[in-house]
Every structure is written in C-alpha cells, then in structure tokens.
Length: 144
Image (tube, rainbow, N blue to C red; front, side):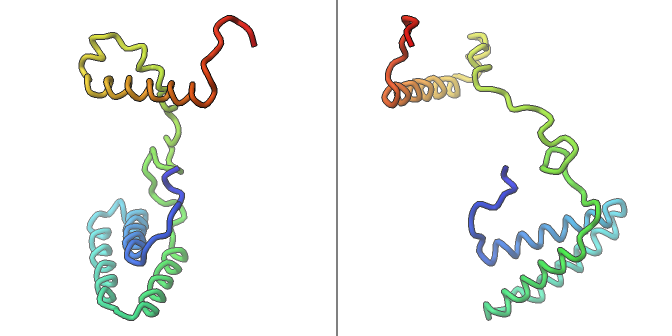
C-alpha cells in the first residue's frame, strides 16, 4: 500500500508532489492531443516558476494550499491511471508469488543466481534460529 502517506512531507516535497499531480491531471484532460498537453505543461511550469523564489514561509504555505485546493476543484472525472496502480484495471490481478516457490527450483536454476540463493539460505537459517529462540524447538513425536 505504497499510496498511503506514512510520514510528514516537507514543503518542497509537497510542492513537487503537487506539480506531479497537476501534470497527471493535465494528462487526463489533454492526453489524446499531445501538443495541447505539452503546451499546458509549459504554462503550468511557468506558474510554478513564478513563485519558486518566495522566501516568506507563510506566503509559500498559502500558495501551496491554494494550489492543492485548485487541483482538487479541477480534478478530472475519470483520471488516467496506470493499470497496475491502485484504482487501475489490473491492480491486484496477479497474486504475489509465495516465497516457498523458490525452494522448488532445480539446482541448475539456483546456480544461475548464486549470490541470491546463498543470502536466502543464510536468512532462512537466521529466521529458524529466531523462531526456535522465541518459541522453542518443534516437537516431532506427535505430542501436542
């Protein structure tokens, strides 16, 4: 769920995020006419460049909030989304491959990636040691 915000963004990061979201909205509006899209991107960049040298943080914060509000009010009704992104038509279509699948690989297949499988075996052993330290060794005699 990489689309959820988990940390506080700085002012500069919020400005960059706003700029990128604005260009994505322009792509939704003018995606089929590339020349109109590029023209509006240049105009939007000019609007951002007009205020890039604002030193007063209160004014910069007000400009940012106004920009975010304008983006929200002018959002496209059916924005362009990448197929595998959240909200896209193929999001979550392919389930993640379980880790145990790599244990079924033939030795010749594993030999193609020696560093990966050496590191993987080391981490598997570390995981087993942590498990046994926390829960004890498993009982194999059938007693519960």
